[in-house]
Length: 214
Length: 352
Image (tube, rainbow over the protein chains, first blue to last red):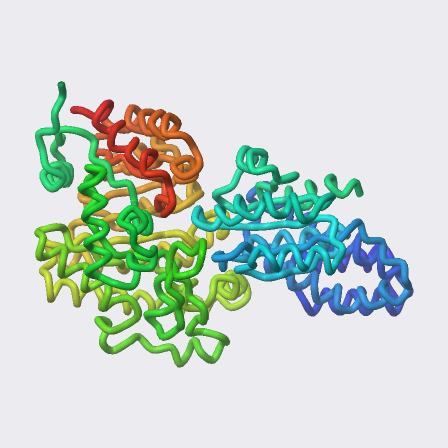
C-alpha cells in the first residue's frame, strides 16, 4: 500500500491531469489507508487545484484545463467530503452565497470562483445565473452567510450590481460583498461600495479568505 | 471653423479605397443603445428588422457617426442550429441569449444538421430584413460569418465545449465543420441575392479570448475554420470584411495574421489589445478601436473624450487606415453625452 505522502501526491496529480478516475482511485486509497480525509482534501485535491490556479495566473493553462481539473477535484471530493462531514471535523472558514446577476447567463467565471472558494475551505451556496436581488438577500439570510459574491460579464448586467448594492448594504449588514466579471475593475468595486473584487478566480478566493479573516 | 466635407458614406468609401477621408470615421458599435435613445425596448434591435434599422439610422443621424445599421449578435449559432433563445426583454438584458443549446450530449453532435434553407434559420430572417434595407439605402450589406468557434460554443454550450476541447476534441471539430458549412452557405445566399461587391462580411470573435482558451487551442480549433470560411468568401468575390477581435487576444494575433484577409478588412480590437500592437500586426488593414465601453457607460464625458483623443492620436496615421470605435458594444444605457464624445473627438483630433 502507498504511504500518505504518495497518496496525497496522487490526489494532487489527478486534479492537475484532470483525471476523474485517478482522483476517485486515489481518494478511495486514502480512505482505505486511513489518511485523514480533511488532509487528503486540502493537501491533495485542493493543492492540485491551487497549483492549476497558479498556472492559470501565469498563463500556462487556460479555462478548459481548469474545468477538467475541477471535475477531477469534485470527483475526489465526492468520496472524501462525506467522511469529513461525518467526523464533524469540517473546518470551514465561512459561508458564501454566489450567483451571476439578473440578465446574465454567463457563469463559467462564476463557477470557477465557486470552486476556488470551496478549495479555500469556504462553504458555497450557488444560486446559478440570472439571479434577482431578492433571491440573493433570501439566500444570504437562509444560509446565515458571511459573504455575498456577484458576477456579471456584460456591460448591461454590471448595472444590476450597481443597483443591488444599496439594498444589500441596507438589508444585509455585516455581510461582506465581492464582485467580479470582465467589465468590472477595482475602481468600480470601490465606487459602488463592494468590499472586494477579484480580477480572476484565484484572486477572488484570496480576497474572500482575507475578508473572512480566515 | 473646420467643417466636414464628406458624408458618412463618402468617408467610409474613401477609407475602404485606401484614401484619406476628411476625418477619422467613427463607428461606435451601438446596438441596444440605439433602441434606448429612440425610446424603444432594447429587444427591438434584435427582434424587428424594420424597427432595428430605423432606430440605428436615427441614432446615426443624432450622433453624426459613420456606422450604418447592421445586424449581428454575440450568441449566434445556437438558434440557427435549432436551439431556443430569449430576446432581451428582461431588466438588465442587452442581447439575445441561448436558453437551450441544440447539442445536449455526444449523440446530438452526430445528428446535428446544417439547415437546408439558411434564410429561415434562427435570426437569418431578421438579418436578411436588415440586409434588404441596407441594399435599398445603398449601404454595405452586412452578413455574419463567424467567428466559427464562438458560434460553435453557442451550439454546444460554452461550458461543455470548454470540457470537450480537452476531453473530446473530435466532437468539437465535427461541430466546427458543420458550423463552417452553414456560414459558407449563408455567404453564398447573400452573394446570390445582393452580389458579392455589395457585401461586408463580419466575424465577432468572443469565445476566442485568451481569458478562456489558450493560443494553442485557438490555433487548433479556431484558425483553420476562419481560414476556410474567409478563403471561401474571398473566392466568392467578397472583398470587404469586418473582424471584431473581442477581449484579450494578444497571444492569438499571430494566428489571426494567418487568416486570409483582404486590404478592405477592418480589424476591430478591444481595450486589451494596444492599438500600436494591432497596427504592427495588421499594417495593410484598417485598424479600429478601442475606447473602453465601461468608461463610456460609467465614466464622465471628459474621460471618454480624452480616451478617444488618445486612440485617434495613436492610430490616425496608420497606413491601412483607422476607425475610432468602442472596444466592444456600447452599453445600451450609456449616457448619450458620453457616446457623443467619440464623434466630437474625431472632429477635433481626427482631421486629415
